[in-house]
Image 1 (tube, one colour):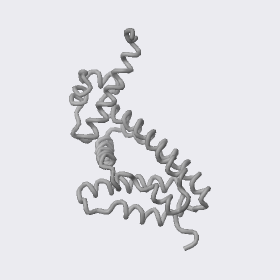
Image 2 (tube, helix red, strand yellow; image 1 turned 60 degrees about the vertical axis):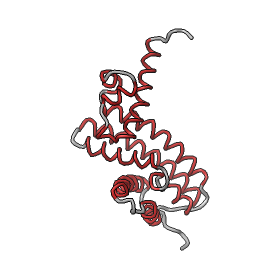
Image 3 (cartoon, one colour; image 1 turned 90 degrees about the vertical axis):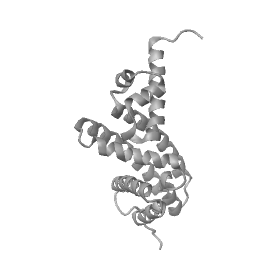
Image 4 (cartoon, helix red, strand yellow; image 1 turned 135 degrees about the horizontal axis):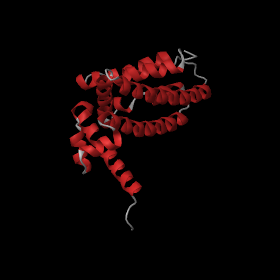
Length: 200
């Protein structure tokens, strides 16, 4: 195998930093993770993190974008399989509330990030724009599923997605503090109201 070009070397560095960032942020959370720790895990200096991502916030955004793409693919596949209102509700309950510890750690880290950047107008604007794009994609998936299943949501789907995102984050933190919290059951109850049974 020949030597890598400069562009290929840069891509390797980028990918290694991204993977190290994903690992450290998942393990330590957004607030506890440091640029030095991420750089060391990837085998580079902290300067590489700033060069490729502009800092920890930029790295987080890149990790989230990759995570979001994977989430949308999984959600789309799950919604394609549902054949009833009940299955639709089950598909919308976050995996963090069932048996996915990794997803639960990500939920907590995401809330830490949001709290950390609220005072930074530029970082908050970037995060909000990315969140809106993600929500619009989820709305499109839900529109297709609701149309196919003849399910009429109790409020506009854009609002449903925003509420579910906020609820998921809050319940994720609550469950982290109090493991007795049945976040899945609470979410299912809210979803049942948002997607009422047309034939009770």
